[in-house]
Length: 74
Length: 245
Image 1 (cartoon, rainbow over the protein chains, first blue to last red):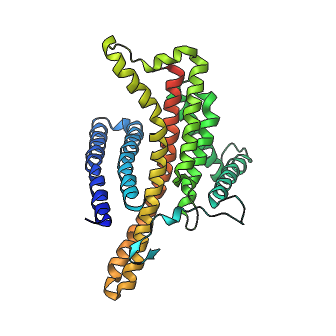
Image 2 (cartoon, one colour):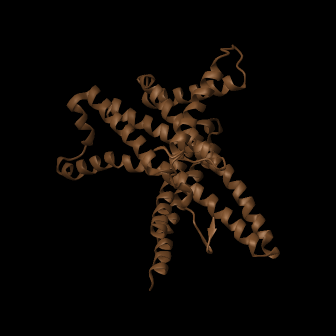
């Protein structure tokens, strides 16, 4: 196997981590929807927390992306 | 942009000296961000009207949001750290937002910048904790209510997680900004490549142009969100330093 194809395969494997991130973001917004449905008055406060959780989870996706970029380009 | 069939996504982050000086476009953008922040607050607050105009509302809203973030997260002591968090928030916010404009450079897309900010934050948190609690600060690394036999395992983990803030905080901001701009570049290159491939490909080219427009809107969201996340995590770390758990 030459280096270029090995790099492409490695970058593809590196972004498998995104499956976990997808599950995580799904959990966050499922919890947001159910808590707003139970108590619509809490929407303002809970939404900020959900966005914070979303940003922290999304960061994990970006770590995977950065690793893929490092494999591909560096 | 698209050289030899492959997409050169990372060359947009290359630093170039400005006017042949030891001064890059990244530094120029930092000065622009500083001037804009100062301009927003100074011009915004100059009328001191009871019923604020548009600019004054923006300045007051930013002030109140960050002040609320500090006092709610850190507690009453948060007022002392408000100027620091406010400065940090605006420096990152303007850095992120300016990067969305074409031909403008995003200085927060460089790990050197974000790591320097993070080292400053974590250093400040440690100094604050030591000044308030003295050597008692070391108890931060000893979890409470844990059997003594587990401590040799848990204390190194606590120390590691304390130090890993350096990496998580800096890489989060840098990776968000870099990944956003790489995505813009990739879809922009799609438009050029498909447009050059022939008339049949103009429809998918238009589609990726539409994706690019949507991505710029998403970038505006991410830019604000990441500045907010950086500021609120700084507040959370400061809360830990002031209250120890």
